[in-house]
Length: 310
Image (cartoon, rainbow, N blue to C red; front, side, top):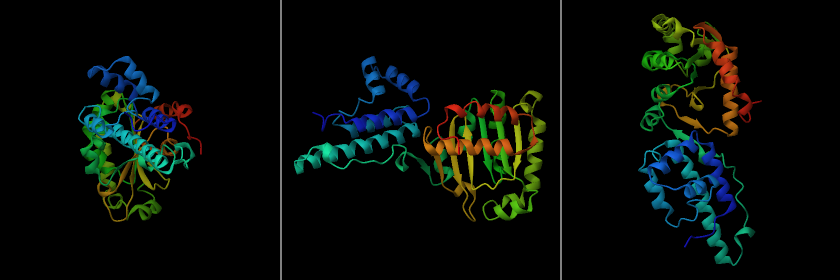
């Protein structure tokens, strides 16, 4: 017997959160096909009605983590959030039974679905790498576009140049934007966050020029390296439709700083999507002919991106 009947709030949580995960409908179909699920079960998933009636939730959750689908960190974070909602509803039901009140008479939890509990978080880049969400993996898996902003992007061209080149071969658009090292104000602003901007500015520029020279004419049409005079307070990465944010921390290398995965459909996603678009649009292109293509590519998604407008 289930602990309690499916609650509408729990159903809504599951349905909305699953809908926020990239490629979820396709992955659910693949997962059920691989594990012999039927169409009725699939329809239940999409309506948010499955698993809520399961008494052995923890066992089911553990089993999911063993599957290819379950090892996806975005999906696991989503399931963890849904589990929290369901556990809250079960506790409300038990409390109501003990007090003799109906569950509906208890004060509802009004916490937004897209809250802190539904954010992917990593302490360091190494932690992200373990989850398959490191910069190298994200570039390697991008099919449409790669956009990265940062104080100094020396590591991108030094460590990930092969992945960037292969992405261009896949006809993805690559756009990299860093603080303008020719600006005395920028040097003063970023020196405690990215001392490489001061120490390696000329070397970074040389590395990007050499990388650009190594590209074919077709690749150069899809590549852009730009400088921005806008004050950056964090680094942003857009890989197809996935957005990741990395903090700037005083006297810390970027790899030692916390970073976050931004849930698509949330308010924050629209805010950062706009920021990426604005930085790119207002940047000064130094290398490549792909900037305008990338600006237009992002602009094509504006209408279907909630909270884009400031």
